[in-house]
Amino acid sequence: MTGPEKRKIYEAVEAKFNDPTYSDQASSLTRDVIAACESWLKDNKTGIPRSAREARKDMREFVYTKIDLNDYKRHYFLPSFIWLFIAGQVISFIVKWIIENHTKAT
Image (cartoon, rainbow, N blue to C red):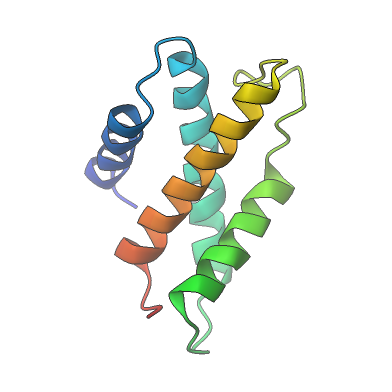
């Protein structure tokens, strides 16, 4: 993905999840999710047609294997179950956006 495409994702996340309490963590999480998604896109260049739903599920599972929301050493760590819910929503939003804009999944 190019810089402007990544910027669009950041802006979309900030617009959708604009809670100032979690804005710094959401920004850090967005950066790591984008990196994980880019890795998934590179590794999954197979010609196997799949539905957008299957692609989102595969990408989301991959992202969760790469990102540990409970790792206190991460910039986006917050010891709160509310943050885990919001982080899950941010991840799902980014994954959906990338699948819709960067894959041929239907």
